[in-house]
Figure 1 (tube, one colour):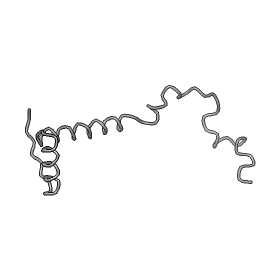
Figure 2 (cartoon, helix red, strand yellow):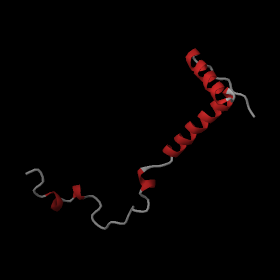
Figure 3 (cartoon, helix red, strand yellow):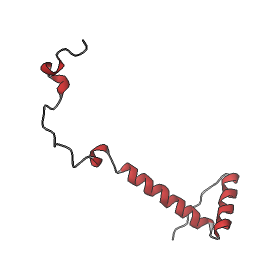
Figure 4 (cartoon, helix red, strand yellow):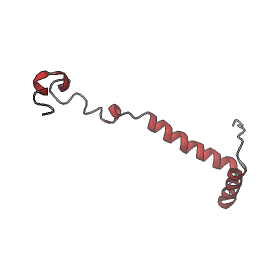
Length: 79
């Protein structure tokens, strides 16, 4: 396993120590768990676009591509 050094503000270090003691585990394990959760959440959120979420629906509706560019569809708009 690789070693990474992280500088923490005193308050965060104290909270980390207290949580490690409360859970009877090491600070390293807590930091790894927190990073894993953070990175998993980021990769999930970053990998899902609106198109990805609705990919099975894309292209299923028939009709003009853009109603706003066709004069017939804009008749009476704004009156």
